[in-house]
Length: 177
Image (cartoon, rainbow, N blue to C red; front, side, top):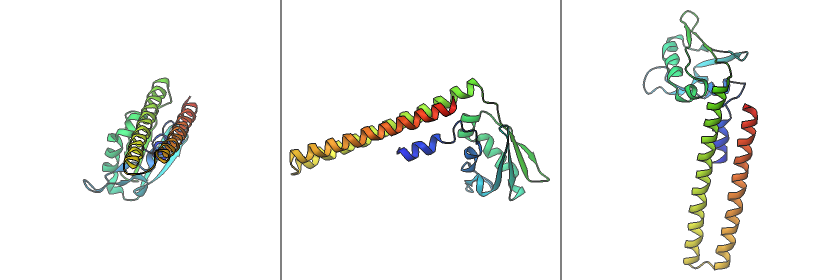
């Protein structure tokens, strides 16, 4: 997991702009095999902090899109169980959003910390691969001094990556609290 992936994963979590959690949500509007982003099948608008409205471009996809939202793991983890209200006549789906409470904050913090742990693990795995490559290059003829220089340089990159990941984590925790 790269730093950009980590940022992308946690950026919509806990945000007052809930639309970002829905825009890239994968929906199946025309049955199996028709996966696409919600923003490609509907206009998404947020009304205050308590409601999202989806105006579908094709009203025949109403039930499939609604079901996709209800069963989406990311949405249910961050917002809880949602019960979209469908208006067949207008092709509109209304979603009432849950209030921010301590249970939801706790769940969001847990998700964010879990993503951070995956990021840290990924950095460590990249470090190990790099260090193994440095050792192999010394065995293959690179001088020991050059091998040590590369290892030291790699350690610096790892430490900087960890600091950046920690900073992103701290900023997100402050945003949620």
